[in-house]
Amino acid sequence: MEYLSKQKYDEIAAELHHLISEVYPKVREDLAEASAQGDRSDNAGYREARRIQGKTISRIRFLQKVLENSRVIDPEVLPKDRVSLLSRVEFTNLTTNTRMTFEIVSPHEMDLEAGKISLKSPIGAALMGKKVGETVEVRVPSGTLRLRIDSIKQ
Image (cartoon, rainbow, N blue to C red; front, side):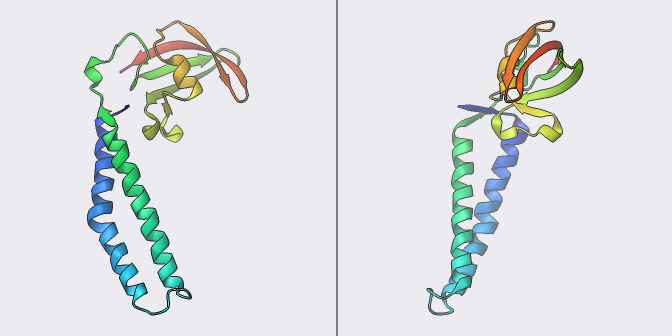
């Protein structure tokens, strides 16, 4: 079971609707047109249309599974004093004395450029359930980080 923000759930549902109602019918038309051009063994247009059809079907199935196995999380029921999903956490890397702020999100919402890290990432997992003032050690590919939680916002 995955938990998503309402915004991300709606984005996935909209993409799925777009793929099913607009993209896939166009892909089927393109495939039929390419198929009508004759010998399929030497038909690059047909092979390309089949490849696009496969990618589209794969994406549709993936998004359907994400929605089937996801629930929208209500931010009101989340603890305010501990790091949890959708928490905006400000922390200090005690090794480099660098302050960072990230929002803890589901893996489907992760976007480092937007300041969103997955709760399944090493840092996200280490911060989960911790309170302001606590220090955690996190093993990352580059070594071990010592992080002190400075603030938590929902």
